[in-house]
Length: 226
Image (cartoon, rainbow, N blue to C red):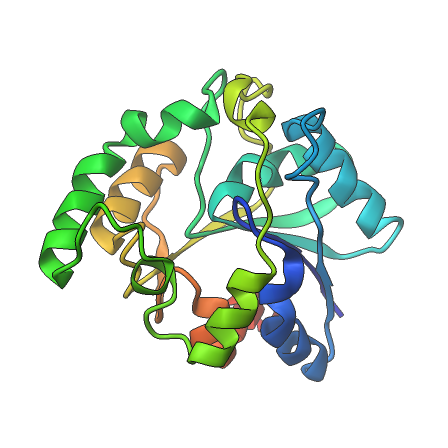
């Protein structure tokens, strides 16, 4: 049995992991959706990683799945608990010393998002979360995910990422084929640049855990089955 530790993206609660957690448990694995202290102005990335370690306790066989902004926390968890595999899921892969607030400009995200908005006919100024993150998610699930959101204090955005390098653990990257916020070609470039290999492609939007739950579980489980 593998214990999948599920880290939410920025300003999100753990609730949107619920369908995937159920699917993973149905397949005989453990699933630990983690509440990160996004709303605490005293909490930065190190405190986020401490919260993950506290949630995990002494459970073994850990695969950390870091979604979106959770990518800045996932590698830090590897210093606190024994992690078998680190998975970036549409993840913001950090560099040493990089402030999260600078990641978007450092990676060229603004241009990639502008091109995505134009391609899909979006008004870039409206910030519609249904169109950007949840366009293929059933509306009831999308509404539940948004209702479980969190205000996010600025603290974690402003401090340099503290590790000298990414951890020396097996690492995977999954990019979502229909992601409008982190478009596929953008994520391919970022992943090659920062990890040295291309991401594996899974179907679905930025919120594939809600829209393509079984397919995402297949992708996460694949190395375990092998």
